[in-house]
Length: 163
Length: 268
Image (cartoon, rainbow over the protein chains, first blue to last red):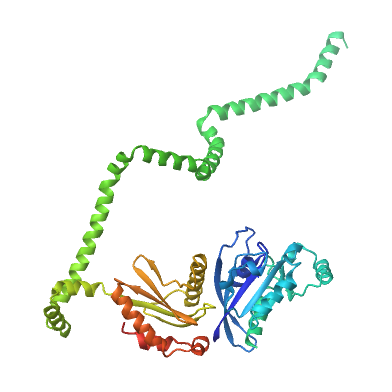
């Protein structure tokens, strides 16, 4: 097994970072919203396409309206970031391109995935249209509630970290 | 048909339906009377309702009466502290006494065991040490019994919190999570009380101490049981500095240092 990889979940408050992590780690979902204070750390071993295994150490940090306000010491040494936005709240993705630029500038070695969560609450096509209209780059749309694209997104990132 | 018969017929036509209805009502009232006045029958009907209500009541107690009971208890304890102490004292006293007795018994057994092995090399060494230092043999035994011991060591990347090596005498919960959480706690404390570049150096919890030694790219966390004192801390710091001379940044990022740790600290 290759050395563990640190992944940090970023995004505004209430976009579903913790729910995505719970869905990926335990395959569970809860409607109850409990705000994350500080950080929660979880681990999962993922088998890659070449049957190699990689251990993902996932840091679910408290939400912030901008990455610049996040506790930067939690972000140090990250191998990858997952920037999560809420598909139902435009304020959580309107500035996303700038946020990603900030991450690329400050953490040039880290791989970044942008994910739109809560797909179960919106029409997929209208969301795609809005994102295209606002010229927002994203990697995939998911739902922690139904589990759609959650495993795929974490596995894709794990795969990227090995390449 | 005579007038009288006609009237009778008309009465029958008009009142038969009412009479049947009245009779059915009478029967129902009688049945109800019987249920109400016969204990067995009444209890068959009423018991399930009472049971359901009681169940609901029991379920609701913590919600409805819980806060009131807690408040009342608190007030009662506050207002009658002497009475509470009087009631609890014998129970608590017995518990503490039993605990101390047990601990003393275990300690005395351990001392006896040490003293009984009077012909061992260890014992001769102790006697010699006692003569030279002037410290009684019993005191040396006592200090040996509470001697600090390394339980676990973690080498952790300072930035990412990723574990680079671990040595543990016992099975522990996920070591990767421990190193992640230690790093998060360390980062939080260092940020929260930011006064220049200062590092968290130790964490204490009940019977254990976590000694944290910071290096440039990594830190080493050592979990110690027993009496962790300044002399032991100084020796440990020197030992960790010696060990760190063989460690480079590449080692921490790419190599599993567990074997090196075990070789170096197995006998500590």
